[in-house]
Length: 43
Image (cartoon, rainbow, N blue to C red; front, side):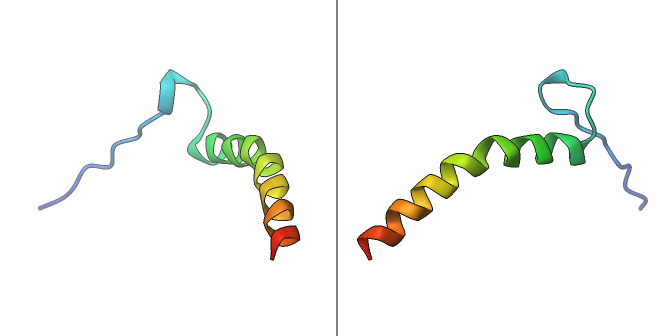
């Protein structure tokens, strides 16, 4: 049985999945870096 490949674009945006994930990581990275530095100071 052949499976059809469905393309899902989150939140109705016209970006590709690669662009959406890249934007998500760009928005998360500063907070992650700050938390990581704080964690390293305590241990």
